[in-house]
Every structure is written in structure tokens, then in C-alpha cells.
View (cartoon, rainbow, N blue to C red):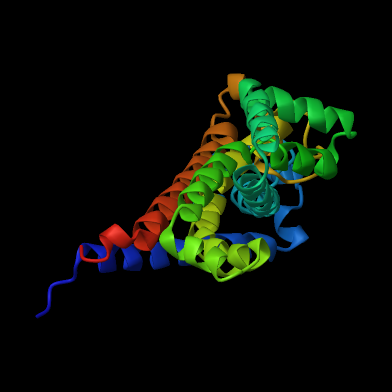
Length: 274
């Protein structure tokens, strides 16, 4: 029997994790509103077979509400990560291919954004835009592009020094042609890996900002809202309202983070023979 190499094992594990993540996301989206409706007869019940995560003060099933909230948080995280990754690609390419002044200005902007704690910056942006989904999206997307932009900049600088790029210039190819045919194809793996690795940060910041009251509105079943509501009851012994949804959020974030690491390993050409 042929032995499975490490790269194939990583690929299989990555596919399994991706299926699990997508299944949780889709299940949360299609949970009907009746499943998360309140019932005072079931209020403040501890975890049981009927309600694995217990119920909250309004009698809502916490497992269904957690999965519903995860779908909301994941949607916000995906949207913010995509916007942030696209910004990073454009900024990184502009810094590497533009003038020295433009490169210095972009690096100064990156240092400025990275010098302020993300949570504080997202809160300020969200508050300035009136809170809600719009402010949260803009705040997260505009603060998470810096590291990926620097990575893209370094990659483009390295690619521009390659011989085939110099040959293309000698043959009279324009900068736009070189960008499309030589640079962008090499940046696609960096883009997708960076996008996946940005996602856990976006989800955690969405949850933390909503928890503090500067993100999604209270009626939205997001994880941050669930955790915020649970704080007023945790001192009474209702630990399940905070612990179980919080652990679910952590597990999803760790799953996606591991998914990004595996994808980076798969796309790494040095791992092709492993």
C-alpha cells in the first residue's frame, strides 16, 4: 500500500476543515427565526439534552442562537477580510511600483495604522460612522490590511528583480502588461492565504466591538451581543450563557486559523516533495 505523504495529509485535513466550516456557516444561516424565539417557560435553563447550551433569560435556545450568531459574525468577517485583502493588494503594488515618495508615504501610513491598537481604532471609526453594520465593516476593513500590504510589497519588489521581468521590459512590454502577466499570477496565492488569515482577526474584532456596544445592534444575534447579554447573569451562576458561546467562537477562529496555515503549506512550492 502506497504511503500518503505529508502534503496529501495536509490537503485532506484542509478539505475536511473547510467542509466543517461551510456546514456550520450554512446551518446557521438557514436556522428559522422560530428556533431562536423566546419562551419564558424555558428561561434560564441549564444545559440539557433538549437544550445543549441551555437557555438565556428570555428562554431562547443558546445553541441555535450561537449558531445563528456565528453565521452573522462569519458574514461580517468574510466581507471585511475581502475588502481589507483587496486594499492590501492595491496598496502593496502601489508602494512597490510607484515612486520613492509614494512608497515612503504608504509605509508611513502603515506605521501609523499599526501604531494604534486595532480595537480602539475600530471603535473610533465605527462611532464616527454611526455604529451599526456599516461602521463595523468600514472600521475592520480599514485597519487589517497593513501586514498583508507589506507582504505584497516585498513580494512585488522581489518579482520585479527577476530576469524574465527584465526581458519583458527589453522586449518593450508595458508596465501594465508586466503587472497582469508576471506579477498578479504570483500574488494570487498570497492574496488567498492572507485573506483566510485575516478572517479570524476580523471575526474576533467584530465580536469584541459588538460586546462593547459599538458594533451590531442589540437585536442582532451576533456572538458579541450574546456574550454581552450573558455578563449580567454570569454572577448568578448561569455560566453556560457566556462559556459555551465563547468556546464555540474560539473553536471556529482556531479552525479557520489552522485552515489558513494548511493552505499556506499547500501553496508553498518547497513542500511539494514532502
